[in-house]
Image (cartoon, rainbow, N blue to C red; front, top):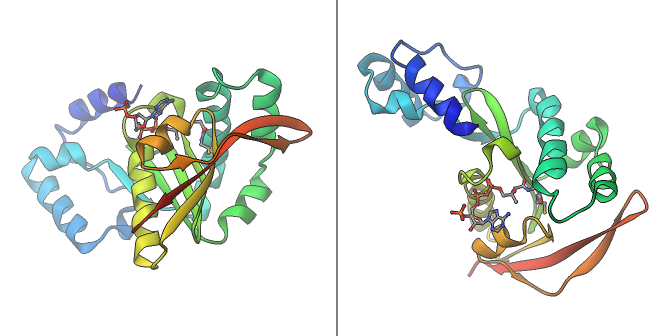
Length: 201
Ligand SMILES: CC(C)(COP(=O)(O)OP(=O)(O)OC[C@H]1O[C@@H](n2cnc3c(N)ncnc32)[C@H](O)[C@@H]1OP(=O)(O)O)[C@@H](O)C(=O)NCCC(=O)NCCS
């Protein structure tokens, strides 16, 4: 799916690009790069529409959709329908707003479509979800790396997470080790997960 978006972009970007709604959040270097891209039609034009940026309140509607799709589709091989329903119902708009109001939350946006988000509270990776249509494109890697960089800058020396069976391979790839499987409860339904840790020093 994401490759299809990219193909559309490659076609569309033969013409000048309209400013995105997030343009004001870019760093000066990014803005300079965009200016160059907009005037030169060079390769940067093609790269511009993907970004990792801080979450804002306007994202919340899309976040819940990504959260539910990631669970219902990407986790289908590891959890049955009852478990996926219980897990995806564990967050509402209100609980997401409350959960994301503290700590650091970042989103991945591809051509103005929100395709993933991640959230850290102090030394704890609290959420990481990527839309199934954008899976295995390195988006979780970029989101996670942003959170890890933030933690390092705060002087945090170890990160922890409770990781789904679906995400275990990803967190292992990122350098986390597991401390054995455990069961968590969501809406009265049991779901297996891994407590995992990664030293940052
Ligand atoms: C887990 C998840 C966030 C990964 O997102 P993603 O953007 O597809 O991950 P990336 O493309 O950055 O993956 C990087 C590497 O991690 C590993 N990895 C990712 N998903 C994996 C999987 N399902 N099984 C095994 N390894 C996996 C691979 O080594 C991958 O590199 P490769 O694609 O070159 O083989 C996503 O599948 C998801 O949202 N899952 C459902 C929700 C969930 O479980 N969230 C975590 C809650 S703790």
